[in-house]
Amino acid sequence: MIVRNIEEARQTDRLVKAENGNWDSTRLVLANDGGQFSFHITRIYEGTETHIHYKHHFESVYCIEGEGEVETLADGKIWPIKPGDIYVLDQHDEHLLRAHKTMHLACVFTPPITGNEVHREDGSYAPPEELEADDKKPL
Image 1 (cartoon, one colour):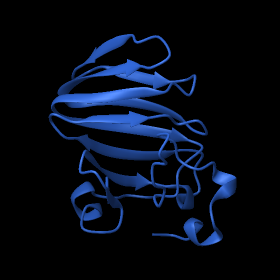
Image 2: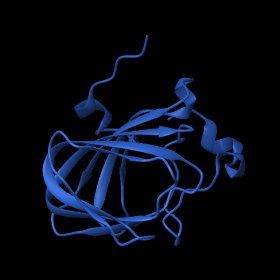
Image 3: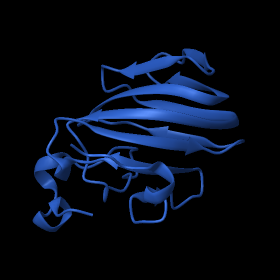
C-alpha cells in the first residue's frame, strides 16, 4: 500500500515546476511505484497558455478547480474546461491549454512518467525507452 500526502509531497522533488512558470505538478504516483500509470495534481496558472503534445503517453485530465480551455491544434476546436470536466488525450492530441483562472487538475498518464521528464520544444516528453536508467530510480 502506498499512502502520500500532497502537502508533504510538495516539500520534496515530487513538486516539479515548469521552466516558464506556467504550471507546477505534484507527482503523487510515478513509474517507480510499480503501477501502470502515474498520477499528478497539476496547477496551471491564471493567464497562461501551454503547448502540449504527448506523442508517447496517453493522459486523462480532471478539473477540480479553476477555469480555462483546451484547444486541439489539428482542427482548432476549443473546449471550455471547468470543475467537474474531464478531457482525455486518447489520440495523442497536440493541444494548447489556457487558464483563465488558476486550474487545479488531477492527471493520469500511461505509460507512467518518472517525474524527471522535461517538455521538449514540440510539447512532448521523451518515450519511456529513451529515459536513462538514473531517471527510473525512486525520488
